[in-house]
Image (cartoon, rainbow, N blue to C red; front, side):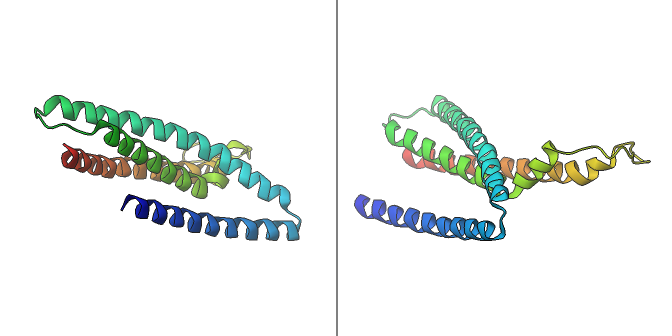
Length: 174
């Protein structure tokens, strides 16, 4: 059974990588044909610059959070049952990595262009009469701030889901 699950997981990973590689090669060929290789590379570099730190930070934070949940759970539960801590720590790491991957993928695919606009915006030197903000704020920065807010709300909701899943795992293992 374990060997079958490893084989199925391996096949799913190969298919996912194949599909991602097809999109990557198609985009590369199109950008090269149009003469915009620098744009393709800038997108790729920006996605990596955003995705890697988001993945690392969120994976570490969720791992820390889940370990604190586990510690609090075992401090409040009095039981003589033996829990397989190695397996539980493996589940904790897997959940943390999956959470980090999902959040990083969402951040990379939706925010890369808005991050570039936000970071490289220039002022128009024309103020909005109502809020006294430069017009460039509405064009270059506001959309990024809205999407960042939506992403943070999504992360909070995902943490709630991860908490419920982790408590279910704790209850089934102990």
